[in-house]
Length: 409
Image (cartoon, rainbow, N blue to C red; front, side, top):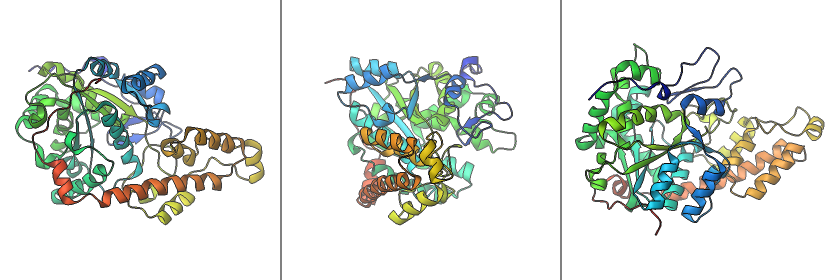
């Protein structure tokens, strides 16, 4: 295998001081603290999802696009057109997403990719693999191995509660599954990528553990179908579509560069914006700061208190000024959260009109958001309560699984 460095168009330029910096482990906004997504698309070299592409998804699947698509929350892609071409021709593809288990419970930002992946699995009727990177959290968060393994199973329960089809879904943890064909792919990827390239892509330094340098190949490997012989046998020609937040793009730029040299297909991506912290849109939520996020094990009172106390407001300093000028929707977190989770398009538009014009006050929009989030979390908690250890074993067990052919019936 050769070790040519990544082509220039696949490598993001280094960020200058004061500019935004996005890596899989660190999200820093620009001088104003905000993420410039247009600039990020240009920097990473991906493409925006057009209205025409959303319309094509609706036409091919015969169902309305997910609100995350219609509202531009999943906003960028790599080779999504190719995946839709595959589907139209009846050519199989599969989905791959993942989670780094570093907390007892997921927060709502963690749920976003799984909610969207559930929609994709249902809409396209395709297999799904979900990677739990418990090894990554030992390396980056310093978790004990046994604790990371435990958190992986706990997080798996929250993921299963999203409603995935066990007959088409394989959830695995790296500590339990890596080996065999999967490990052989990892080593082949590692032989293709020199250390200076990994450091350049992921921002690693000379003081980082060697495990951090080696890890990107572990997250890259599930993009290749022969990592899962119980699902795909030895096939290498099954395309992979990865729903993820855009901070994960560096992994898969590297993967896409390596794939042709290994006789594999390049993975396609569909990428989302970040779900902001309650305190404002300076990046994404943090599982380590419980007041920055709504967690799926929060009580209704927890949710109410967090929204009222911490959700950054775009309302004005006085009622008089607010009535005259209206709220600043560009910074208001309650408005942003409703764009994620309020399904009713007409109601969302009406709230935006009223709040943006000053007719609705901050306390009123926070009350609307509280009701929406309480309902989501309570429904999730009920679904999770039904997920037993046996159910987790069923999803995580290596068992013969018939690959479901993608394509129109």
